[in-house]
Length: 137
Image (cartoon, rainbow, N blue to C red; front, side, top):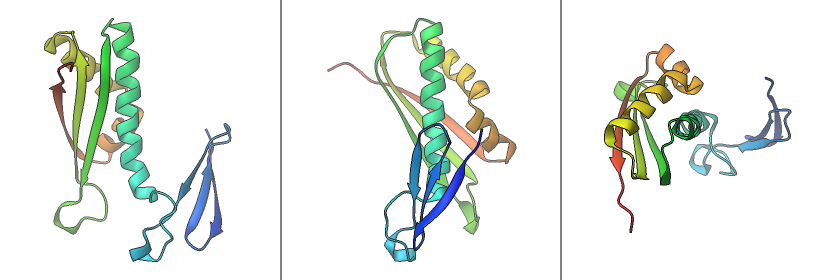
């Protein structure tokens, strides 16, 4: 895996993964940027959210859990003026006929296999997980 970051203008940069994908990062205007993209720090949290969503989806398929909606809301907290995340709260929202026990088991497997989550855990970030079952409209 490889990533290259190129400054394009001011505090704006483009990151490529050498797999035909790129992301623009920047700072908000209040911090001297042009607000043309998420900050690198925000991308960390977004990656965690995306990883939980992707890995859950993969495992759910193997466990034959079908769903209409799968959303992962991730909130990063910086307690006591910490420079990085100290705590992360993750709410997995799912509209599925599967039992709560089966969904919980899928989430437990997801937590063990999500590489971004493993990095957060190894960094000492306390993460809490909540499952919210949605009802079909």
